[in-house]
Length: 376
Image (cartoon, rainbow, N blue to C red; front, side):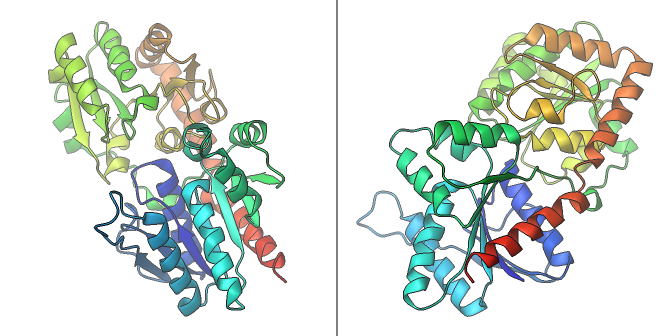
């Protein structure tokens, strides 16, 4: 198949899922065309069966904000026509499914019919889509997609409860491609961040308010009172300064490293001992799954789909959102008990293997075939 994938090329989970799905499809012989305003962060230099099409947003003097949606629709029209794509797979209802519908209508005027598969990731539903002004557009976009998927049962139920959806929503969970991750322990890297063999806690996110990065710092400080430990903060976003200033106020800056955005996530996970994710909302929790694939127990909130990924008392511990005390005690419990830690680490790896891309990729291929049937 010739598949067009539309995504945000960001550090967040949806862009990572879209990119790794496309790479896996290309490895199976499908021709994959990525359409985005910037090359996705994990696309790297892979060229076999992959083409990237950049959406260039024109800077018109008339507009205070350049019309990304119009530029995307025109680019999609061009790519579908001249690359002769079989289908479009768009990640996010708003604006991508909405733009895909416009593209479909323009193509239909010319006698070309292309199905659209829409994948809901969470932010498009739980945050953006719940704005009253956008609700009609979300309803329209989902209902006019040929096939709709969601990354967790929780997200599907939330979508059906909040919006007026007439379409079936299929659940296809996020996944981990073990072949793309090198979790080999790097002794020198570990010594760099933990010169005295301290335990290493790690947090990875886009540092938006919903990730509650201040809670990560507060959990770390309480653990630090009981043992020698370091904290790696990976990613960037609007709450980074808040977290940095909090570290200074709490006197722990020397033991916390803010590393910004990096594609070296696997190497950092491989040297870490515990992953902390206290998010207010997580439709799935892809980054927790990546940590588990490295054999790292997870201490997290129990929100959304995250509770199904991080199994409480098995792969780590979950707590109510904002319960810094319990998260701290759970972290101390794991890091101070070698036997328990090893058991949880092994459980985390085994649980992550259930989400191997080899298990998930056929589900998407089946959805694509179903979507193609809808236009015959």
